[in-house]
Image (cartoon, rainbow, N blue to C red; front, side, top):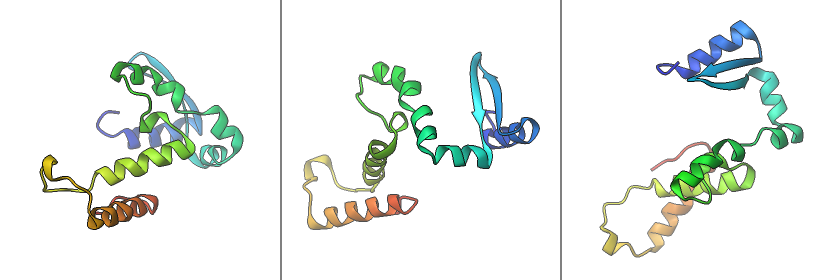
Amino acid sequence: MVKGPADFFVRCYRAYGPVCRLSILGQKYVLISGVEAANFMGTRAGRDCLRSKEFWEGLLGEYGAERMLTGEDGDSHNELRDISCAMAIPSNRSRAALQPTRRDHRRLAQARLACRQGGARG
């Protein structure tokens, strides 16, 4: 699985259907996949019962963080994704010279728009 997780999950879907149980490194998981899962996740019931926060909250304590992208859902996840994408803007300037300029604000706005449209562009 480590070499090709996507291929592994596709094989599971083909062999066992849209729902199956897995044991990975001693941890038990339920894999839901395919069109059925995508449709379910688009419903309120799907969003309410399959949340990220509970899965990732132990890692938050390890790092002393309050929030993390993978542990948030909905608007909060979108906000953190936008911030993460905006931070990926390359800069050749030193920290001492980091005073925001009109150009910086424009690049930040462009990066946020690119993230919302499906990918960071530099």
